[in-house]
Image 1 (tube, rainbow, N blue to C red):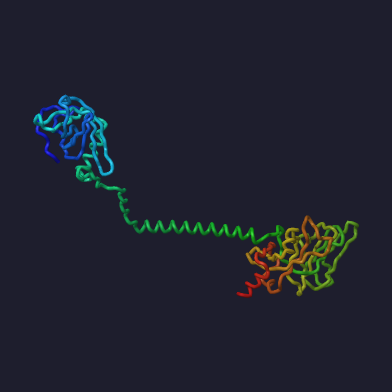
Image 2: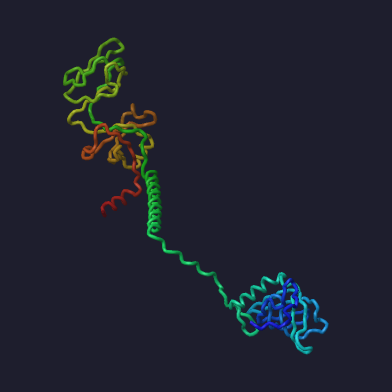
Length: 359
C-alpha cells in the first residue's frame, strides 16, 4: 500500500466525503484516458487516483470524462466516470491527481471489488498487468456427519421395505401373467362323487315314503303319481344310498329326475360336468386338463366328451365325464369341490419330451 499524499486535513473532497485522506491509496497498476490523452496510474482510492502523464495546461482544475482501465492477462476492465484534473508538484512535473466528482457513482461497486481483491491477495501484479489467483471453481461441499446407529437402522429398514414391496409387486404381476397366459378356467364348478347306478323318478308326482337304510329287496322310496297310482321302488343291491337334494318325503318330482345314487364297494371316484365349446376346443387342441381343488391340490384328469346327441348341448355346453387316475383318487374326498382348468402347452411335445428325458 503506497503512502498517501500529505495535504491539509481540512481539505474538502467532492461527493460528500469529509477529508481527502479518508480513503487509503493502493498501488494497483492501471491506466487512465482523460479526454484524448492517455496517462499511467500510480495509485488509486475510492475518491481519487494519482497518475503520470502530459496534459494541456488548460485542463487543470477542469471536470473531464475519465476512463479507468485495469489490464488483466487476456482481458481488461474499464470504468467510466468524471473527475477534476489537478496538477501536483512542480510546474514541469508530470504528476496529476484525478479527483472523482461522484465517488459513489455506478463505477464504485466494480472498483471496490478490484481493490478488495487486491488487498486479499486474489489479484497480484504481473508487470503492468494484473493476475487473478483466487478460487476458480466452486468450493466442495462440507462433509456431512456420519449417521448414527439409529439412522442407519432406520435407513436399512426403509430400504428393506422398498425391496420387499418391489418383489411383491413383481410376484403378483408374474402370477397374473402366468394365470392369463398358461391357464383357462371353466365357469361351472365340479363336485367329486363316486360311480354307480342312479335311481330316477319313474313318474311325475310326490314322494310319499323314504327309507335310506333299505337293504337289498326292501322298498327304498314310493311316489304318489299324478295318475293316482302308488309306485314303489325296491333296492336292487346291497349297497349304499347317496340321496339327492330332492330325496325327502313330500318332495315333488318330475319323471326322470335323479333321486338316489347307489354306491357299491367297487365304485370309483368320478366327476361329471358340462364344459363350454371353448373348453372342448382347447381339449382337442392338446391342452392338459386339470382339477384345481378348493384346498389347492392340482390333479391331472382325462375328459371324455359324451357320445350321445341327446345331452350334447345344454345352454351351449357339452356333457363330459371326468376320469381320475386311481392313484390320484386316493388323495380326494367325496363331496370336495373343484374347478376345471386347461393348461396350455407352450413348448411342442417333441421339445417337451426331449427336455423331460434330459432331466
